[in-house]
Every structure is written in structure tokens, then in C-alpha cells.
Image (tube, rainbow, N blue to C red; front, side):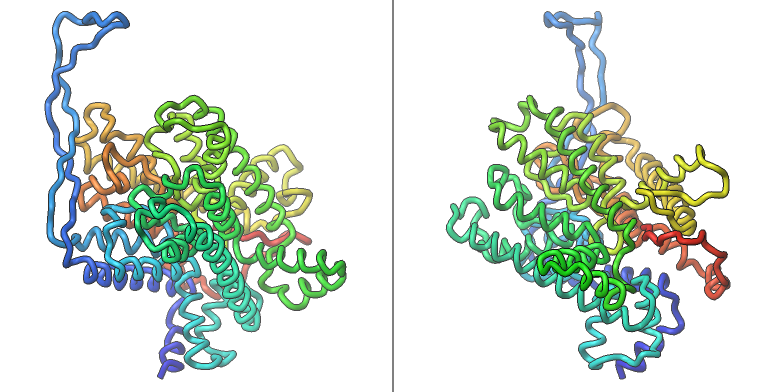
Length: 531
């Protein structure tokens, strides 16, 4: 029965299967969370407008104007209801499936069943729905036929050479996921088992460690406490373990495969065996040399950039509370790592300076690397665009060069399309939400302002999950948006996770060009994954 079901997938292209699977999983996840959370009381923040009399004062406290004037400002009140709305359930499910971490309702109040559903959605989203389904398929059918349509779709999605590489990729993905998540779980579990119970607010330390290990490696940013990781601001073990998992998840599986074989060969002092393995055992799933170098150099550069900017700008920020020099360094490092795609926070993002927030918007938009658990337009996209701009000064007709390696022209064209459509999409969503929420955006306001809207949209698109929030709130800024704006944020998370190229490739009129032959590439050009 299952074999016949999977064979029916020959009616779909890889892009269509990916989009449909995410939409179905989002709907199923939303229904499941709506079912688990319908029996509890929910405190829902609601915005409202009030007129405030304003008297501008000079440095000495004297009125600058003869008469005061009135401004409209946003204030919040709490509405208690029975069970979460379906929009909030769907929002949380999509946020988990797209490994984003934005919340429109207090996730710390979810039932254990709801937390388990979210954790499963995070794992599914991090692995990818089709990859997750393929693992399920291989288990229940004990190996699919080499000629099934399902494996063809898997080959196209994973960008592998042939059907054998599909099994290789699945094997490596499972190995790395198990080892990294288990390692983080054990280290953090041991650390918290002997720590003050107040750190986890009474949550079982081993459950906390398991949930956050899965959330960290999959770059999801979901936390079981309403303060996220603020309780662990001073804890280097938790900070460094989660940061390491975020970085490893953000490198992408093809890069991890390359590093795995490279490190193993160096440890055994047999570089010849490494080359044989890379060219024979996993040649179809490992990243190219240029992609590995771009991933490592780009990751290191962005971490250092965010680390330095945060440290310099926020060093004297009294809004962060009393911090030692070591805490400031650790906080700056952790937020730089988390901001690119994970969305965990050890400090209140809303208290940071504008320079830091703008830096974070750039980092969230860029993200990490393809074929992993990260979001954003990806580091290789930015690197190829840089090479493309630099190519303007070179001889016409030559290939784009990165790190002394020629880049495939298909990577260049994909990078241009991805950047263009991403900017257009973010601009369109920003325009739509600011129009819907225009009544709250008349006067610059600390509770509801355009910077928070843009930050939230870029965070959703980059599947990051950081939010500037609001005073006294324990959720993302999305919680005080209208239901229609929440649906737009849901659309943004799906668009960011699936990627503009996948969504465009799934459009019906692309079918006519599915088997169209590609033009010739530059001789000796190396493939680099985009998006």
C-alpha cells in the first residue's frame, strides 16, 4: 500500500512536493496544537489607542512650546480567553516547522502534549519534510525500489547525483543529528541536574536539556521558559553548547560531511584515504571545495562581525543590567551566533541600541548555509553576489571567481534571482502589515513602531525568531498584531523556509520546462548551492 502511495508522487515535481508537504504539515500541526491547548486559560495581550497630552521640555525642564499638544499612543491590556485561537495555533505550528521560534502566545504555558508536538515539528522542519518522510518510507518499506518516483524527488531535492546518494545523505543526516543532539542533551542535562532548580523555573532539567538541544541544532529558537535563555546569561556551559549546536546546524549537511571525512583522515594521518572517500563514497552528497571554504569563512566572518558590533555598541548599555566584562563578551558572542538563524536570546532584544538592531537585521537576512537547518538568503548567495559585482571589473565573458575558484554560472543566476525576489517579498509584506496596522503607526511609539514591524518580518523571513517584543510581554511582537497580520507573518515564515527559488519552481507554468536541457556551464566551474 505504501509503495503504491509513494509511486503516485510521480505526478509532482520536487519543488511541488516540498511546498505541498510543508503546507499539509503546517495545517496538521496547527490542528494538533489547537486540540492540545483548547482546555486551558490564555492571557492574550491586546493593543488599544489613547490620547496623551505632551509638553516638550528643554534640558532644564522648561516648556519648549506655549501650549501642550496631544498624541495618540498605544497601550496594552490583557484579555483572558479559553484556549488559544486557531490562528495562534497555526502560527506556532508554522514557526516550529519552519524552525523560526516566533511566538504569538506564551509558549511556556503550553501543555506537555503541546510541547511534544512543537518539538516533533521542529525536528521535522530541521530535517526537511521530504527527508523526514523518506526516512519513514525507508523504514516501513525496508528499502524502496531504485526506480520509484519518490527517490527521484528525493534526488532532486537533495541535489544529489543518483539514487544511491539519497541513501548516503539520509544515513549521514541521521548520524549527525543523533550525535550532535544527543551530545548537547547529555552535556546540558548533567550541567543542570546539579544546578539551582530556579534556573529552569521548576522544569525538569533533563526535559529542558532535550528540548533545547533539539531546538538549538535545528536553529529553532524555541525555549520552555517565557524569558527564553535569560536565566543562563552568566552560564558559559549552556551558552557555548547551544552556540556550538547552532553553528553546526547552520553549516549545512554537505559541509558537515566534508568536515567529518577531513577530520577523520587527519586524525588517522591518512589524507589519501580522505580523498578516496570524498571522491568515491560520498562524492554525490558532499559540498564542493569552494562551497566548504565559503561556508567556513563566511560563518567565521559573520560571527566575528556581530560579536564585535554587539560588544562595542552595548558595552555601556545600562538597560541590560549589571554585567561583568566576561558576561558582556559571552553575551555578545552568543547573540551574534544566535542572531543569524537560531533566535535564542539571553538579553532583552528590545533594550539594544539601534546600531545593534540594524546589524541584527542584516545578519538575519543573510542567515547561514544551504542544505542545513538555517534560514536567510544564505552565505553562499551573498558571496556569489559579491563575486558577481567584482566580476564587473574583469574581462567580459569570464566566470565569477571566489577564493580562486570558478563558480558555476547557474549559481550566479540563482543568487541574483534569490536576492531580488527576497527583497521584493519583504518589501511587499512590510507594506501590507504597516497598512493593516496603520492606526497604531501614526505616532512614533515605544510599544508599536515601524522598526519592530521590519525587525519581526526579517526575523520571520530568515526563520530566526528574534523579536523586539513589547514592555512586560513574554511573547514576540507578533502577539499584538491583528489576525490578518499574523497570517502574513505565517506566510513570511513559510516563504523564508521554503525559499523563493523553490516556491517559484513549484508554480504550474514551470512544468513545461522541467525536462528542458540546460545551457553549457563554464569549463571547470564548481557547483555551489544557493538558497
